Length: 165
Image (cartoon, rainbow, N blue to C red):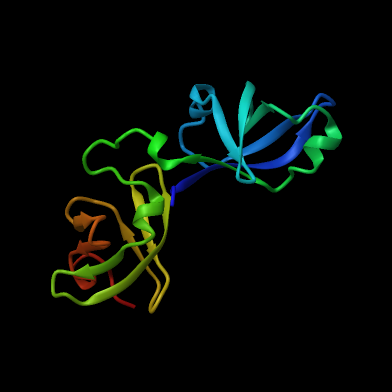
């Protein structure tokens, strides 16, 4: 089965010629300019035009030719095959992969599964919700190893870097 990345969600129509407003789900919005085709609702479609507007991307997609057509695509996701994505630099991971990982400390104590990754100006933060909510700053002296294949992240014991409640 081909793994897909959701790179945007159609949130509204734009104009009367079938353009759609897309909320980007990727850090690199210029990716939309590089793409020739995308999957919309599981169907491959050509991208005919790309514009940027504040925090949205305006796309002209093949087969969506009127405002009425565009209306039927609201809330649909825009996806691309993962195979089309470039290899990431070392120590860089896709959030979708991190969300499959379980966090352990160096004593093999299970902290929980990564629910999400929060981007902050200084560093990312791994958000573990269960069994106890923990926010883990992604810093070299806290996150010691990430193994996507084993779905395992190893951190320093929480008490060594966080004030206990």
